[in-house]
Amino acid sequence: MGIIFPTERMLLLKDGKLGRRVADSGIPLAISTDFNPGTSPTINFYLALSLSVIREGLSIEEAINASTINPAFALSIHEDRGSIERGKLANLQILSLKTYKLIPYFFGMNYLKYLIKDGEVKHAF
Image 1 (cartoon, rainbow, N blue to C red):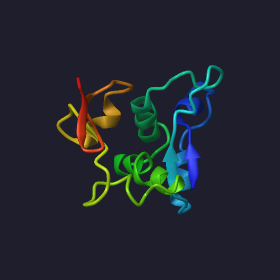
Image 2: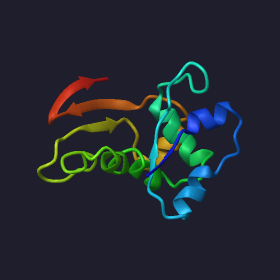
Image 3: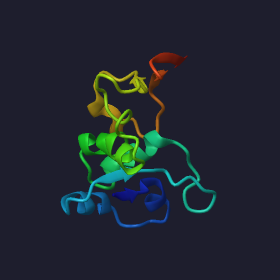
Image 4: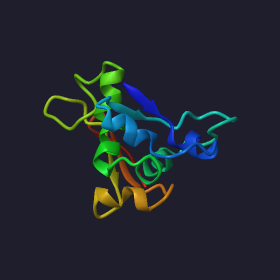
């Protein structure tokens, strides 16, 4: 599993499209912020998701997989997390966008409307 840190790559002025090159090689990807005070001082995952599309060249569908099911496999928790399937834990984020395809175009914005954890609404925004 390859892990890309789009926010770190942007702040360190690294060339873009590493995500595209890794995806094209057939290696599954995960996205992370790599939050730290030196090279990636952000915990905004939506920013990392946007950058993975805008700078790293992933499609929005690839970026969503790289932030859901792929990390679940990397952490060996894919049996009950990482995708919406009968019998899995319902950990979901409901967004205030009309379509998931708009995610990268609201750069760094938090569009979380509801957070559902273990099947229960934990937060409404």
